Amino acid sequence: MVSISAAVRKAIGLQGGDPIQVTLTVADTPQQVTIPADFAAALAADEQASVFFGKLSNSMQRYHIDNITAAKSADDWTILVLHAFWDSWLHERDVLLARGREHPTDGDATFYATSYGLFIAAAVASMFGDQVQEKLTLGGDGGGVFDLEARGAVTLTVTRATIAGPPADQVADALAGRAPVPVVLGDLPASSRAALSRMADFFNTPAGHSPG
Image (tube, rainbow, N blue to C red; front, side, top):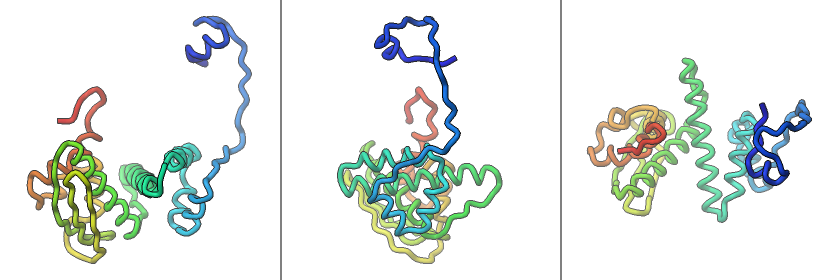
């Protein structure tokens, strides 16, 4: 059964249940995705990003490009590119780790994913009126010192370093609801853990409910 929206039925004078004849054509060639020139230049300058983007399905490529082209300023464009990368990085981990396979990431990718995860988690906390001011020392690939302040506006200053602390990739997972924030960031004050858990709580809240 092929459904037709009420708006289309009204436009062509049909009622629900009216028989129609439809011709379907199989799309047996890959659909081409038009990449904006500035985004193509950015991909050309970053081999890892280019390879990663090239492995995405056409629908995922179009999804990210639509978000990027909707940006109205350079700042919008930067945030949307970071968000697209963070979103893809997380979902790639979701698939691979669930199958018991290692996530083929590196320190730079983990660093950017963790940095953006902290930034957006703090932004969500600010939406709830929470304030956060913490200096996090994260270990593993992509680790370093992450100086985070959220008092309405969000400021994140990061110094890359090889340092002991919770693994950066596990922190990125926790902030996105893949692991309990209190377990991964147990050294933070309870108020900061609760604030940075807001986004994870949202991701893990069933549809039709409100996060506490």
